[in-house]
Image 1 (tube, rainbow, N blue to C red):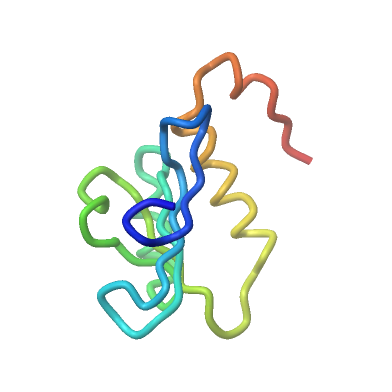
Image 2 (spheres, one colour):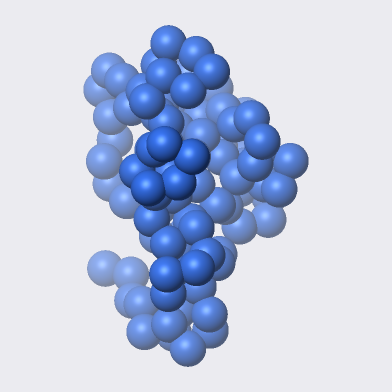
Length: 98
């Protein structure tokens, strides 16, 4: 838990995803770390799904609404990128993409 919402951390210290249950709006979403340039690309390509979240958006994090028809494969990639963005190199090298 972090700030009253479920959150996920790498090695117990660096947060890479947080759930956002109607946080500052009336929609369910998650916010996550993103590699440089990904936030802009995602928000511009699909503003109905992706957004710049409050507080952490200035650090490049991206928000993702979890409503309607969700492309879970795409979100899998977004969360994996979030992990790789904050994970130490020794852990990041252990990850393989399918």
